[in-house]
Amino acid sequence: MRSITLLGATGSVGTSTLDLLRQDRSAWRVEALTANSSVIELAALAREFDARIAVVADESCLPALRDALSGTSIEAAAGPRALNEAAARPVDITVAAIVGCAGLGPVMAAIEQGGTIALANKEALVSAGEVMTAAVAKHGATLLPVDSEHNAIFQCLAGNAIEDVRWITLTASGGPLRGFSVAELARVTPAQAVAHPNWSMGAKISVDSATMMNKGLEFIEAHHLFPVGLDRIRIVVHPQSVIHSMVEYRDGSTLAQLGPSDMKVPIASCLAWPRRMDTPCDPLDLVAHGELTFFAPDEQRFPATRLAREAAHAGGAAPAVLNAANEIAVAAFLDGQIPFTRIAVSVEEILNETAIAQAPTSLNEVQALDGEARARTSALLESA
Ligand code: NAD
Ligand code: MG
Image 1 (cartoon, rainbow, N blue to C red):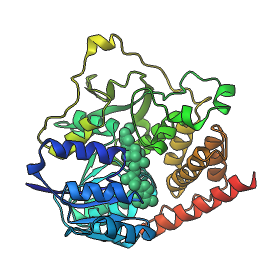
Image 2: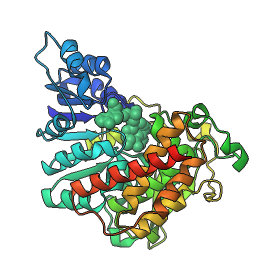
Image 3: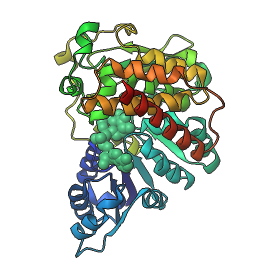
Image 4: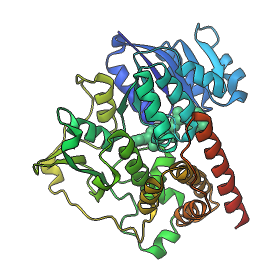
């Protein structure tokens, strides 16, 4: 029996993870389950999986959580500190599936225990960068990538030396707006932006896929997970989402990982690593797909990958600022406050007015940078 903590249990990745645990309940002991504020859902999951503790980030939800867990021996807790403390409880594996930089504190708390972390929460790694990778090295933690592209690359690198890599190719579906003109993009509604053709995901990452900022964040994520140098990481649009990413070696061999576009596959790869486990996914039907196509990204219509690449090259505060500005702009778009095309424009404006300065060297510095960039972006969007 292995112990597991699931940060962000009520989300899209959280739900897929719990579906995999349901395949063999006797193999898992659930330590902590967390959510932002969905008390009823969280309490039901904590009861179903007999979790030791359930934590909500939103402190005002604590009485409701206690209520929903009454009659059980499951502990209830709330607030950012309780979230960090729950994440620091020793377990065999932590699945980090909170959305946004809000997940950084708990991820770092898990890393400091030196455990195994299956990381879906890419914003945390983009913001903290070297602070996180240094903590992983210092505490002897193991970081397993859940993000499908990075999980593919991780699999393609197994048994090979990173020095022999010529290219890492991140594939991108191109999102639901791939064929839209600039004029059409300006009129896109939140409902259109979140309607992803291949993947079913949370609202924030769905918008990121539509702007291509998701691929930009993934470019920075890949840079930290697989240190081959920024100039060896490239992006190819592959609308069918069958090839999840590729690694080309110096001898001209390219290894790719293929699979259904279902997050249960990369999550299962992390849960069972270094072994394999069954998933309820349909097998890949290549004949049904018929053809796989590839295109260069269009950075005129979708400037986000350029912004992320520039931020990665600039280093310092830039990646954390890029991420924070994007989180605020995406939330404003989903709220109907700004047009779709304003997301990338405002991220660029905030980056342009940022003194890149030195890279943050501690969790506190990352969180301070993140908070400051959020405040500036909110002010910018309100002033318009
Ligand atoms: P989601 O919105 O469906 O779920 C997010 C989870 O985090 C929920 O449990 C929510 O309660 C919790 N949460 C939200 N805000 C919080 C806060 N401020 N503090 C604490 N908890 C909070 O998101 P998702 O689509 O499951 O994505 C989760 C992460 O995984 C993101 O970083 C995303 O980029 C990454 N990811 C998702 C997918 C996917 O298919 N959904 C694929 C690859 C990577
Ligand atoms: Mg991905």
